[in-house]
Length: 112
Figure 1 (cartoon, rainbow, N blue to C red):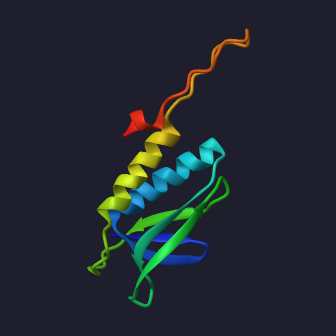
Figure 2: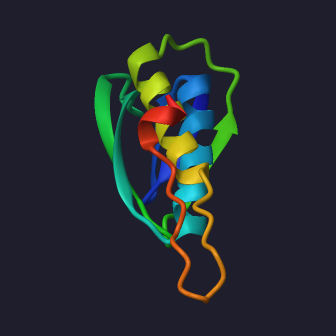
């Protein structure tokens, strides 16, 4: 489990989801894109919540380890979706030289 800090609020999030959220946020920023991700978490009050993160190039997101033994919700479906989003943002679109050649595009279905 990790503490995820966003907009001066700290939540407890599953390790895998926290790592994927951080990686996706980094890639979104580098690509100049934006997206939202809804993550299951536990708030500071101990209640389970679903937190929506807005990820942009100006997002300030921090994760840190914790020794707490609090049980945080995992979400394998969300983890798979984040991995797919990471592959999409990581994919390289190759452009041919400025001589009027066609741009090569990657089919997102091939990234699954």
